[in-house]
Length: 171
Image (cartoon, rainbow, N blue to C red; front, side):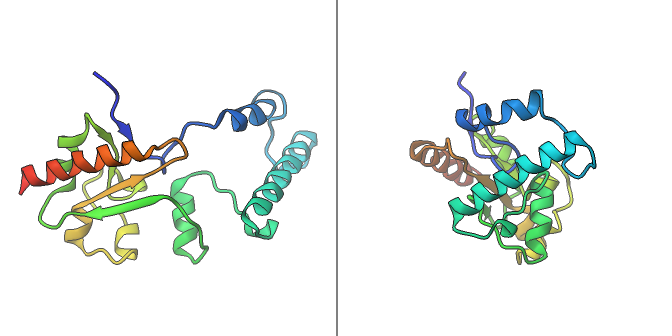
């Protein structure tokens, strides 16, 4: 059996080999809380500032506009508070269907999630979905697909076919 197509990149993503190599010194030797007032914190704070400047240059933005978060939920909370950011995420609702049932039909072919990242596998819909304008019915029928740098066009087409087939099976 082959692994399903991974479309849950909001949760985690494979590291680009160049990023991994750049991170190794900070994972092994130069660890430290960048907010701390000691040599480990100073080194890490300088590295974070360098990364912020590099990212800002890549995005043609000011360094203070590059905000790093600890995860998807924190990033979502910032976005809801008005901080603009761009993700390759698609939230699809299939009115009249239960997203968990739909997900169960495609799980062996597509690795995605219901609703939003912070509420996957929970019965109640996330507060993120109503903030996006989804009513309770659409929130219960929502799948979240997120693409990463490694996602291919063929994987998107294959996942689309699998989800479409499952929707037809349920309707």
